[in-house]
Image 1 (cartoon, rainbow, N blue to C red):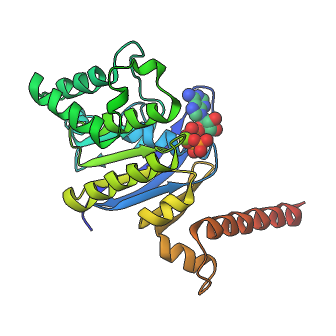
Image 2 (spheres, protein in one colour):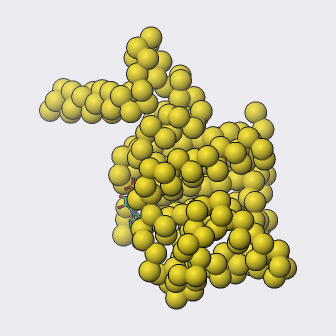
Length: 259
Ligand SMILES: Nc1ncnc2c1ncn2[C@@H]1O[C@H](COP(=O)(O)OP(=O)(O)OP(=O)(O)O)[C@@H](O)[C@H]1O
Ligand SMILES: [Mg+2]
């Protein structure tokens, strides 16, 4: 497997002492659709922030499309697209201009950037919103704009940190159609975090489960289901809950035995 995202022994401790990542090892192949799953506070967004060079790791290393973040920072910026709730958007700028500026940032000419902005407002059904200031968009439409911004430069790798939170069912279906098409036509690699396990079940093929900053499982989704309850044909949601419950029970038993 040609690893598009390679992560070795990654550690991150926040200044207040929270150890958010405790030695993460992962490899994600080219054109794969990977879902990082885990409870609130497990470390998913921290890992995404590090991989997308928003914050720095403490130790370990990672490569994005073979690029090292320390020496090839700008190459990584051109390779990845990021949609997360933390994306900064100027609230006083219109939707259309926000998209045009993003295109200009990635080296497009004025007319290229305007064309791409038109394409994306169409794709994300934001035409009626394009002259509105980003700051007054509804929650779901803001998410659509975040997602559109991530795609402006046709990135090879997409990081989606809970991309569909707050989107209505139609917008959500439309969003996944866009992502599926990109994956099919362009071979885009997708790194998704979500709490909607039905989305991961439907679109991703590979997954990792992170708990307290440690990877507890990584492999295909079907192997995970099979490991949790062989031959049971559970949904990912059911398998996940079952697995977490077993882990909690085991840990409780261990504590009881130690006491
Ligand atoms: N800036 C920060 N300073 C200190 N601690 C932080 C900071 N950001 C996150 N943390 C802590 O790091 C841990 C991991 O947080 P993170 O946001 O990565 O979790 P997550 O898996 O994305 O959770 P969620 O599913 O709720 O989005 C948590 O304990 C969180 O409180
Ligand atoms: Mg998060």
